Image (cartoon, rainbow, N blue to C red; front, top):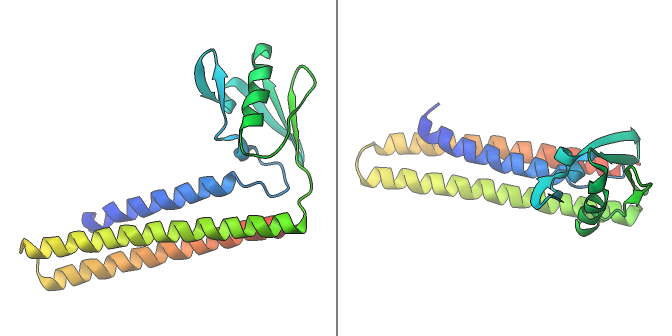
Length: 184
């Protein structure tokens, strides 16, 4: 593949990876430790990922346990979870924190599906913007007369095929997440 196309394909892959991480943060009624990925805990003055200061486990389908390596970090962990946007109140027994996921209501599931679709559309827009940037760069190449019009046309066609491939991937990922959310 042409390195001029590969550069844009890499950018599109990053957009898709970002969508995956956003979808991982959406809770679907089951305990998923990835919703804690973005939480930072103040570890002696340094914001650290929750995973680096505690052991995270999923002992049951709707429960996550968080056991800090240093018991003095318990209050900081609780504070970090409460100030995050995951929407679950932590329960503590003095040694560990438990996050109990409630069963999602039908309305909440529908709202989450709307959020999934919106994030998918935003990702598609980002991918199309990358395609537009690529096509603009190819047109500038034509003005410098380094390449023929046919070659520019071939580059644009190749970039469109890559774009179509990533749009299909976004649709598949979004459909999978919607299915997961709507599964009771």
